[in-house]
Length: 256
Ligand SMILES: [Zn+2]
Image (tube, rainbow, N blue to C red; front, top):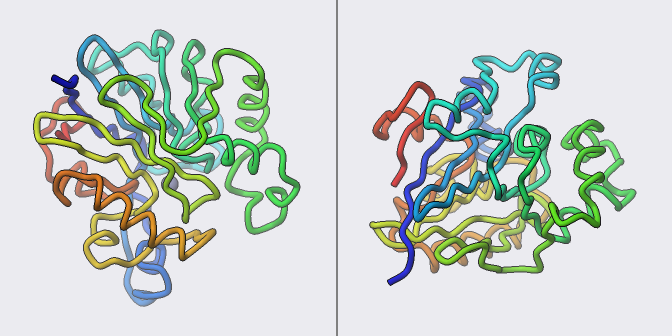
């Protein structure tokens, strides 16, 4: 029998309001949409894996992030001590997912090699369309992990522990990764920003910041083929993850 895990969504900021076209690429210009910022926690079989780190307090203050609470504080509500977390999967290196890496000082970080290389080593990443997506502070922190045993650079689909697998899922970034998790309902997938909202998967339409539209749509095919049922495919920023799932503690809901 394969290990089974529970999955929690941890809302660390929001709601943030923007044009509907943020959620539905090149549509819904006249609408507004609220989105939340999340990290996720996979728990079971004596393991705790964090997916994405959110934003650390200094950047949250600088950006004046609405509804911000330090992810470390929220995790403590389910008895997870950030400084004891052993494994963190980063879906991609946009600031809202990776700035808080420093909040997990003892963890191994699992990142796609191509993603790490692009944001930290490719000059293209310092051009204006990319520049604001990864701040200098987290760049410096992630760079300091280079060559240490706290950085695990993945090449494509790779298991992290039995029942938890990283899946290369490009489109939104150079080498996004989604996380397939074995649960009591079958295979669930934390897709992070492979889609901002459930709607994107349902309507077969991407959200914003597209690096490669063809890869994005291929990612949809790949994730749909892998997940046990479409309701177990979770997006990156949908308020539904807070509003429509059982509340475990303030800011924390159980997805599966
Ligand atoms: Zn995001």
